[in-house]
Image (tube, rainbow, N blue to C red):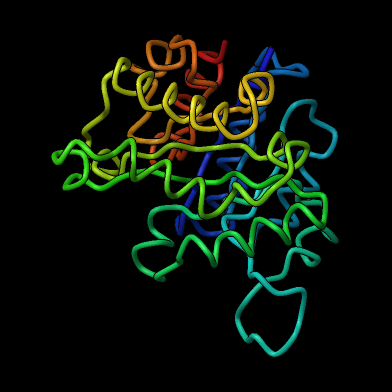
Length: 253
């Protein structure tokens, strides 16, 4: 079975004390986690090391950085390298979130470089893709998302591509209260899987974990996650509430 992941994206929220309280509350809940059901917590940079130390003895729970730079090291003031993340025990890195693309002008080619350096250092990229409302209304979302994937990922080998987690995020449903219907989510996830199948073969495509990220909440997670090609979620606002995030975790297949 493909890995099923409930990933929390705290974004730029919470003080250290608030973050510690939230993490304690998340870990206090009981979950059935195993080799194919995981929790990944994408936490602001200042809190990564304490979070890694707190979860290291908890089965099935991992810490992710929300970003990294595309260079190994050097005079890049304010940036964080993958080697730095690896050295403190971070195992996942979120790449290409729509907010990074929109506010920081991250291009597909720039993200391809980030993917490369993350994989070279044996971390797992959670690669985000997705379309704006304008593109969705034009009905060209399939082509748009396929192009994001091709330009950032399709230079990878089959063995490398199987290590990448995909997070589809309809930008029009992030923080807006709007959510793609479970069938809309399934349709685009199937399209993404078919796009990988066309390039790498069906066997590889069936191994790739594809998360849905767009206003996932406790009251819709089970329906969305039940779709055959949806393998969990990248959760924003709802992940800041431990009880609601627990519902989402327990909705995993």
